[in-house]
Length: 247
Ligand code: PGA
Image (cartoon, rainbow, N blue to C red):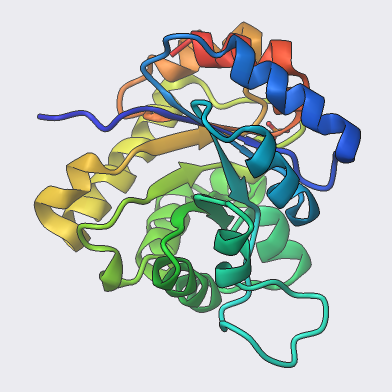
């Protein structure tokens, strides 16, 4: 079986100013000969500047969200075309912070995925259960349901990633153990295979939620973990590079 190329993506969330581009440049300078693909997803207002600053380096730039439509009267939103025009190559979609704060449904996330595909952006689609769902024994059902609902059939054969991010692990310092991660990643792989057949083997399944230099190696070597989506620890070049080196 061909394992997918690992992807380490930094999600800066609503952090970073123009001066933070220096941190991204430090990542590009320090990344060296890694077998991973490396991406940083800054706030949309920094995407253009960061893309220019990282041009010709190994580090890709991504967005954190897009509107499902290509243009129109949607005050405050940005489209996939705009993100691609600014130099982004990837986009995080369906992050739990957006699913929760903006009531994003699986259906909406799937429409956003289609928007990303229309404009050549590689989607990183996030799924993950709450602590209550895990305690109720529903983690696998919730996560595989999100995978089925958020990934449209048009993804077949296209480059995309799924990120498993248990909501209770995001920004908390808590992480599932490797058995728990492997159980969910295995269920996601099975679901992807049911949806996309052979092509499913090429989809990296990232883990996200409190990944840091001290736990990265252990998590990244768990079965079916094809990289990481890194929040807090992606804001400092040294920490992010340590995670890249743990691949
Ligand atoms: P964290 O965030 O690494 O700060 O827990 C991960 C994410 O939300 O993508």
